[in-house]
View 1: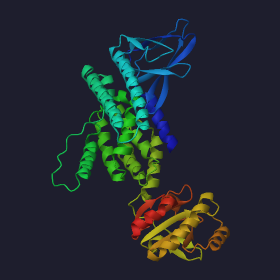
View 2 (view 1 turned 180 degrees about the vertical axis):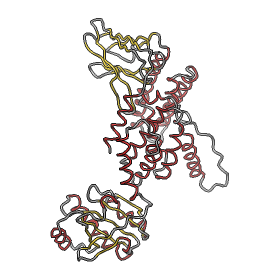
View 3 (view 1 turned 30 degrees about the horizontal axis):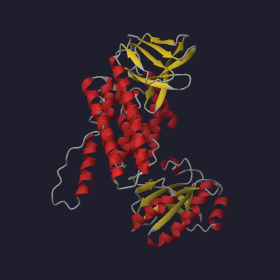
View 4 (view 1 turned 180 degrees about the horizontal axis):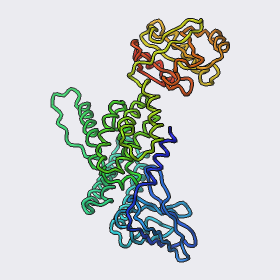
Amino acid sequence: MKRILAFAALVFATTLTACSQGYKIDVKIDGLKDTTIILGYHFGEKKFVSDSAFVDSKGVAVFQGDSLLPGGMYLIILPQHTYFDFLLGDNQRFSITTSAENLTNDLKFQHSKENSAFADYQRFMSDKQQKMAELRKQLQAVAKNTEEEQKIIDQMNLLDTEVKNYWDKVINDNPGTFFANIIRTLKPIEFPAFDIPENTGNPDSLKWVMSYRYNQQHYFDNIALTDDRLIRTPFLQNRIDNYFDRVLLPIPDTIKLYADKVIEKTRPNDKMFQFMVSHLLSKYQNHSIMGMDGVFVHLAEKYYLSGDATWLSSELLTQIANRVNELKPNLIGEIAPNFRMMDINGKMRELHDVKGKLIVLYFWEPGCSHCKKVTPQLKDIYSRYKQIGLEVVAVYTQTEMDKWKEYVATNELNWINVWDPNRITNYHKLYDIYSTPTLYILDANKKIIGKRIGIESLEKFIQEELY
């Protein structure tokens, strides 16, 4: 599945359409000759190659094509793997001069006012970043709560103010430009002065809640979510990931709600809509936080299987649909699929008949190296919590009965041991068992409240549920 979505993202990255007027970028790099340079572009965290050009004996190269390139932040890469960035918008006929020794400081543009301003910005930011790094180093070296420390902090705050003022100037001086939209993307929202009632018991806590809610609602206010040129920058994806990873609470229903809100903001622009849907689906397909597979299912059903994903082939859509069908029965909040299996004594046992305040459903096999570590730990946990309502149903996933019985007897695994050697119950699909060990946690009503939880987190989870 990971390869499916990676391929889909690559197709998207390489097939955004271009206009038909052509581009011509003349480049002169002092100190470079008789070699090849690369024209590339940013695409989120990655970089892709768009063109190449030969540098003659005078340091001159020309990138030229019959169709306009998709707008975005591009880069010219030298043989030493150093590079400099520039912008491509509607104007794609201009010249660049610089030196191999100092690409950014010597960077100049002709016939591109926007890129001249962008080059000035890069030099400005490079200077401020160097000064900030030096101040951080000084801050680490001084004693805490001293006048010297406060002086350095004041200098850092002044640098922050200078950057913010520069951002505002760029936006005001370059209205409606791609450059201005990049700066808007980088610029955090400003929080209002919240009205905290005087008699509030914990004003700091209330202010945090109000700030969180405001950020939740207004985080994307500065970002032009209908400017698809931002896709080809390193900034948009970073801002999106920061929102979903750090601003929002990691609760699946919250993520679903705000994913829909953000996606709908992009719908007026087909390319931006495609990027946002593709990125979020890929982000949550194998997320490390328990329960986020529900976000994947939600996005797949609402935007892919509904017919909105017109850019994807029927084959890939079918594979996504199959993955959704594998996940839906075992999502957190669903009633665990029932099964009837034979236990180690030859008696038929039904999952939904098992009594317990909490049930650990353990899919395992004796020969699995990780299972050999997890099983004794689970046994220890079971011995300490079974008297207050914990039960374990251990499903042996292989077919060798003698090895199973021997291991269970030798290790005194006195919980409910069952197996289905012919997979008649289809448990491996109902519970999406593609590796062992796999643990699910069910409540007394057999509702799934935890899945694929690590043994190191299991005891804390059990304590929170049973006490």
